[in-house]
Length: 205
Image 1 (tube, one colour):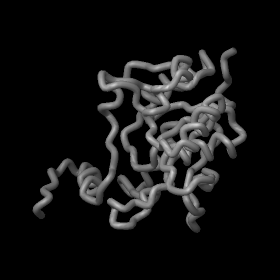
Image 2 (tube, helix red, strand yellow):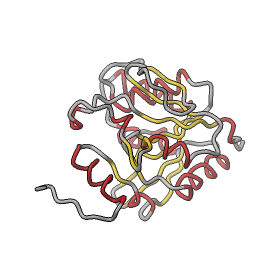
Image 3 (cartoon, rainbow, N blue to C red):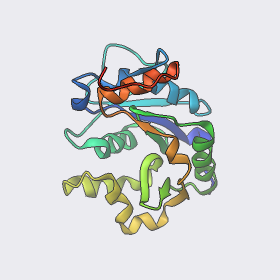
């Protein structure tokens, strides 16, 4: 049976420690003066609710998003998503890492419409295989995710190598995923910020 959009919440992963960001919390990275996660929330504005996955609840709020504290230490994105599926009242989560920039409405709506049609988990794939983000994770994935966590396997792509993955929907993301930028270092953050005026950034400066 097709799911309604009210069953789906936006979910931003921000539980990492930002070791490659010099200790900065990636949650508060900005582009054009606005947090990256707020750009994501704006793109997903058709969703009623948003949650942010964190290791500890920070003092500063981010828009109207609620906080979800990770239930599992050192379990990476898998633990963050598992925590969200267990604690959020919604049936499914549209998951985007907080350090991902470039998600647009077309890319998001393609996933959402397919979820509404099928009610199944939905992901993009390229010639290299399925990609975990952005993606729609549902509560039906709880058993396989818990099994993987209990085995100490926190590799996200392992979820797509299970028998259960045959029931997931994979859409061609060859073109769409090229739009995304992942900020894993301070250097990458500065490059993105310098796009404001179109100047080329030299690492030697």
